[in-house]
Each structure stands twice: as structure tokens, then as C-alpha cells.
Image (cartoon, rainbow, N blue to C red):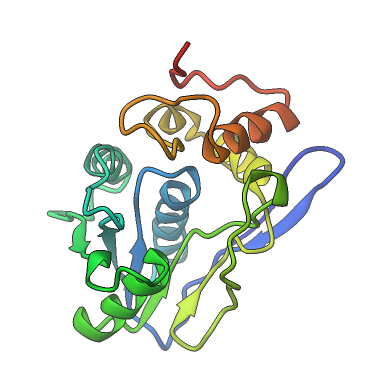
Length: 209
């Protein structure tokens, strides 16, 4: 399915597709704004096209060994929209097994090797320099897809509204410093605030004073 998204002065196209030659699909899911939406869009594509793909969510432990507190509720909310997806729970991948490797890269490697998925999707978006640089270059490969690599946070927020899933934003988490609330000062929080601001939309998620 093709979407056109983003602020009025920066509209971009996004294509979400499930290839016929890869039926067992893994998707990296946490409480981040991009990965949450990506999981929803992949399931939407599956049922819109009537495909027989198996889409499994994978949760990667952070480098400090912590698990994301919001992922299970988010997955449950998404699956309420797709009752055919029964008994689906995030499969935990431990990125601490490779502590010096980007957790996304480490997680994808383990999903492909250990979980035997045909293809893995990750919600990595275009990173803006003012919100911290990610030294990793993300390019689609034979077994890996990064559908959001050409869009930034503002485009992703717009997509939430286009697919009528904006309420899910209240359960997403972007803070790099706090597990439960947003500090409002870190790169993740500032990028989140900027993304909503570009669309002149209000973020109802709680920020610390």
C-alpha cells in the first residue's frame, strides 16, 4: 500500500509491501513511535491484500538488559484491530549478547539466525542531526527492510492520523533517560516534540515538569 505523508511543505511517499517470496516475517517492535506504527501497517497490508504471511513481533532488550515496559500493551492494542492474529506475543531477543553492536543490528541478526524468519522489518526512520547522529547506515538488504528510512518523525506522526491510530501515540515512549515518563530534554523527547510541532498537532503523552 502506498501512503503520502508529512507536513504540507514536505510530503513524501511511503510504500509498505509484503513480498511473495518471504512468508515468515519478523518485525522489531518496542514502544517507539516508528516501530509501533510499522507493526500496525504491516498487519494492515496483510489483511488488505489477503495474504497468508505470518508476521511475528520481536522485542529487543536494551543494551543495559532492560525490557521496554510499554511494548506488550501496545502489541495487545494493535492486535485488537486484527482478531485473526491469535495468541501473538512479542518474542524477546537479547541484544546484550553483543554489547558493542547496535541493538537493532544485533536483534535482526538473531532473528534471522535463531528464529529462522525469511525477512525482518525495522522501523528505523530518517535521523535528523539536531537530535543526535546514528552512525549506522541503514539500507534494504536481501533479508532486511527499513521502510521508514526515507521519512522522519513528522511523516510518521501524520501517518498515525491518516490510519486513525493516533490514540496509540499515548502509549508510545521516546525518552532516552526515563522508563516511564518523558524528561523533555533528551534527543528522543526533543525529536518527538519537533515531529508534532511540524504538523501543528498536540502530543497528549505526559512529559515531566
